[in-house]
Image 1 (cartoon, helix red, strand yellow):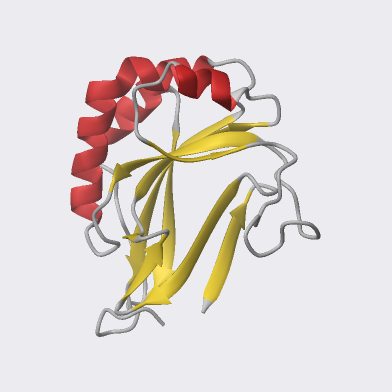
Image 2: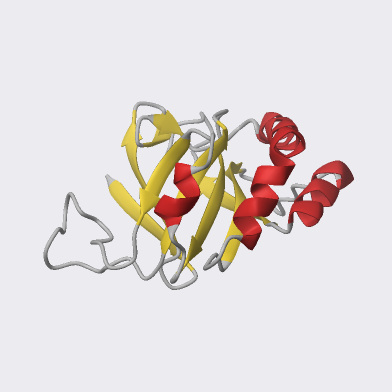
Length: 170
Protein backbone atom coordinates (compact mmCIF):
# COMPACT_ATOMS: atom_id res chain seq x y z
CA UNK A 1 0.00 0.00 0.00
CA UNK A 2 1.44 3.39 -0.94
CA UNK A 3 0.30 6.90 -0.11
CA UNK A 4 1.43 10.43 -0.83
CA UNK A 5 0.79 13.25 1.64
CA UNK A 6 1.04 16.79 0.23
CA UNK A 7 0.89 20.13 2.02
CA UNK A 8 0.94 23.72 0.81
CA UNK A 9 0.62 23.15 -2.93
CA UNK A 10 3.22 20.44 -3.15
CA UNK A 11 5.84 21.84 -0.77
CA UNK A 12 5.88 18.77 1.46
CA UNK A 13 5.96 15.25 0.09
CA UNK A 14 6.13 12.12 2.19
CA UNK A 15 5.96 8.78 0.47
CA UNK A 16 5.33 5.85 2.78
CA UNK A 17 4.32 2.23 2.56
CA UNK A 18 3.22 -0.49 4.93
CA UNK A 19 6.15 -2.61 6.05
CA UNK A 20 5.49 -5.05 8.88
CA UNK A 21 3.93 -3.42 11.92
CA UNK A 22 5.01 0.17 11.24
CA UNK A 23 4.67 2.78 8.53
CA UNK A 24 8.08 3.28 6.95
CA UNK A 25 9.56 6.26 5.10
CA UNK A 26 12.35 5.29 2.74
CA UNK A 27 13.68 2.63 5.09
CA UNK A 28 12.87 4.23 8.45
CA UNK A 29 9.93 4.98 10.69
CA UNK A 30 8.22 8.33 10.45
CA UNK A 31 10.26 10.88 12.35
CA UNK A 32 10.70 14.53 13.24
CA UNK A 33 11.86 16.19 10.02
CA UNK A 34 13.11 19.71 9.31
CA UNK A 35 11.76 20.74 5.90
CA UNK A 36 12.79 23.81 3.93
CA UNK A 37 11.72 24.89 0.47
CA UNK A 38 11.07 27.78 -1.85
CA UNK A 39 10.48 28.29 -5.57
CA UNK A 40 13.74 30.25 -5.88
CA UNK A 41 15.79 28.36 -3.27
CA UNK A 42 19.24 27.35 -4.59
CA UNK A 43 19.27 24.22 -2.45
CA UNK A 44 22.56 22.99 -3.92
CA UNK A 45 24.35 26.16 -2.84
CA UNK A 46 23.03 25.77 0.71
CA UNK A 47 23.88 22.06 0.91
CA UNK A 48 27.42 22.69 -0.37
CA UNK A 49 28.21 24.60 2.84
CA UNK A 50 26.06 22.58 5.26
CA UNK A 51 27.40 19.90 7.61
CA UNK A 52 24.03 18.19 8.20
CA UNK A 53 23.20 14.72 6.95
CA UNK A 54 20.57 15.76 4.40
CA UNK A 55 17.86 13.11 4.00
CA UNK A 56 16.38 14.45 0.74
CA UNK A 57 17.09 17.21 -1.75
CA UNK A 58 14.58 18.11 -4.46
CA UNK A 59 14.57 20.69 -7.26
CA UNK A 60 11.83 22.77 -8.86
CA UNK A 61 10.80 21.29 -12.20
CA UNK A 62 11.80 17.70 -11.37
CA UNK A 63 9.16 14.96 -11.34
CA UNK A 64 7.43 14.80 -7.98
CA UNK A 65 7.48 10.97 -8.10
CA UNK A 66 10.49 10.22 -10.32
CA UNK A 67 10.43 6.44 -9.76
CA UNK A 68 6.73 5.88 -10.46
CA UNK A 69 5.82 8.82 -12.73
CA UNK A 70 9.06 10.09 -14.32
CA UNK A 71 7.48 11.55 -17.46
CA UNK A 72 3.80 12.15 -16.92
CA UNK A 73 3.24 13.08 -13.32
CA UNK A 74 3.28 16.26 -11.34
CA UNK A 75 6.47 18.28 -10.98
CA UNK A 76 8.09 19.90 -7.96
CA UNK A 77 6.95 23.51 -7.57
CA UNK A 78 9.83 24.36 -5.26
CA UNK A 79 13.35 23.32 -4.45
CA UNK A 80 14.17 22.15 -0.96
CA UNK A 81 15.55 19.69 1.51
CA UNK A 82 14.58 17.44 4.40
CA UNK A 83 16.75 16.75 7.45
CA UNK A 84 15.92 14.00 9.94
CA UNK A 85 15.94 15.61 13.38
CA UNK A 86 14.75 12.51 15.24
CA UNK A 87 14.48 8.97 13.93
CA UNK A 88 12.36 7.65 16.78
CA UNK A 89 9.00 6.10 15.99
CA UNK A 90 5.62 7.74 15.72
CA UNK A 91 4.66 6.48 19.20
CA UNK A 92 7.60 8.36 20.77
CA UNK A 93 6.55 12.01 20.61
CA UNK A 94 8.36 12.92 23.85
CA UNK A 95 11.64 11.51 22.51
CA UNK A 96 11.15 13.35 19.19
CA UNK A 97 10.70 16.58 21.15
CA UNK A 98 13.81 15.85 23.23
CA UNK A 99 15.83 15.17 20.05
CA UNK A 100 14.47 18.33 18.42
CA UNK A 101 15.50 20.48 21.39
CA UNK A 102 19.01 18.98 21.23
CA UNK A 103 19.17 19.53 17.44
CA UNK A 104 18.02 23.16 17.60
CA UNK A 105 20.32 23.92 20.52
CA UNK A 106 23.33 22.49 18.69
CA UNK A 107 22.41 23.82 15.23
CA UNK A 108 20.66 27.16 15.90
CA UNK A 109 23.10 29.19 13.79
CA UNK A 110 22.80 26.81 10.82
CA UNK A 111 18.99 26.74 11.09
CA UNK A 112 18.96 30.56 11.13
CA UNK A 113 21.25 30.54 8.07
CA UNK A 114 18.76 28.25 6.34
CA UNK A 115 15.78 30.44 7.25
CA UNK A 116 17.52 33.55 5.91
CA UNK A 117 19.05 31.86 2.86
CA UNK A 118 17.95 33.52 -0.41
CA UNK A 119 14.87 31.90 -1.90
CA UNK A 120 13.77 29.98 1.20
CA UNK A 121 10.05 30.56 1.72
CA UNK A 122 9.04 27.75 4.06
CA UNK A 123 10.85 26.12 7.01
CA UNK A 124 9.02 23.80 9.39
CA UNK A 125 9.92 21.16 11.94
CA UNK A 126 7.35 18.40 11.39
CA UNK A 127 6.67 15.76 14.05
CA UNK A 128 5.11 12.54 12.76
CA UNK A 129 3.06 10.96 15.55
CA UNK A 130 0.46 8.24 15.97
CA UNK A 131 -3.21 9.13 15.81
CA UNK A 132 -4.51 7.60 19.03
CA UNK A 133 -7.95 6.05 19.38
CA UNK A 134 -9.32 8.71 21.73
CA UNK A 135 -12.21 11.17 21.67
CA UNK A 136 -9.86 14.16 21.54
CA UNK A 137 -6.13 14.03 20.95
CA UNK A 138 -3.93 16.70 22.47
CA UNK A 139 -0.16 16.84 22.04
CA UNK A 140 1.75 19.77 23.50
CA UNK A 141 5.12 21.30 22.68
CA UNK A 142 7.13 22.39 25.72
CA UNK A 143 7.96 26.07 26.02
CA UNK A 144 11.68 25.34 25.56
CA UNK A 145 11.04 23.91 22.07
CA UNK A 146 8.69 26.74 21.14
CA UNK A 147 11.30 29.32 22.24
CA UNK A 148 14.07 27.61 20.27
CA UNK A 149 11.92 27.27 17.15
CA UNK A 150 10.82 30.90 17.41
CA UNK A 151 14.39 32.13 17.91
CA UNK A 152 15.39 30.19 14.77
CA UNK A 153 12.39 31.49 12.81
CA UNK A 154 10.83 28.11 12.05
CA UNK A 155 7.30 26.77 12.35
CA UNK A 156 6.29 23.65 14.26
CA UNK A 157 3.90 21.08 12.82
CA UNK A 158 2.34 17.80 13.92
CA UNK A 159 1.39 15.22 11.30
CA UNK A 160 -0.89 12.48 12.65
CA UNK A 161 -0.78 8.99 11.14
CA UNK A 162 -3.39 6.27 11.65
CA UNK A 163 -2.40 3.10 13.49
CA UNK A 164 -4.39 0.15 14.80
CA UNK A 165 -4.88 -0.49 18.50
CA UNK A 166 -2.09 -3.09 18.36
CA UNK A 167 0.35 -0.55 16.91
CA UNK A 168 0.29 -1.87 13.36
CA UNK A 169 -0.43 0.57 10.56
CA UNK A 170 -3.95 0.52 9.13
